[in-house]
Length: 266
Image 1 (cartoon, rainbow, N blue to C red):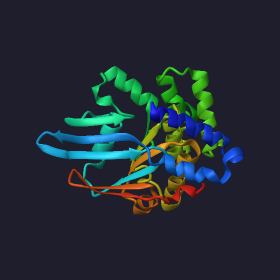
Image 2: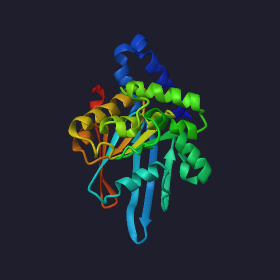
Image 3: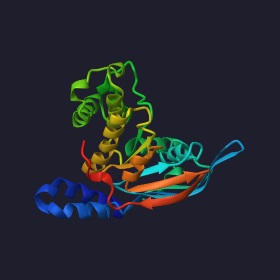
């Protein structure tokens, strides 16, 4: 209840910050970033005889960018999939605002995921037979928003991300950076609380990689979206509000940075 009320307060303040709060806004936003939205409690996961996650506990702050880094095989992607409710752990809890979502049945868990979590992958995963706008609208159609409302929301997001002139283009007609920004727009379609991204810039060149990273921080600031990003990119990790380092199925360190690169603009 408290976190829900704070979230409503955040949205009111964001709308009125330019008029009423002026220089007080950065301090208020930094305070909001101290609130934990997701709590991972003693998560364990194995595949066959291989123990991939060995008692992971982590608190993810709301309205912040958290990077998860570590060598291949550290368990980063598995942790992200469990955090996103795509996988169920063998043990432990995944709490969103104090509720263990892993106690939900498959249907309710799917509905929770569609309403609260967005996903961005290394490959944009756009369906080749649909236009960019139709691809971005997909989560709304799946969630029962309706075609007209979903397409309008997709158009608004694509325009915000600088893709307003690409609405009718098929994925094959987009550059790599454009397609990945389209994937970000799709992740935002249902106004999720958190976006989980697995190596989202791994297939991009340095210029598009930098632009995508700046986009994450801008969306965190302007829309209040929480981002959790699995990455090998140390420059992104250094700019994040929080850096989680993993090795051999365990968290080795958590670094919290108060003055992250959230002020960057695209």
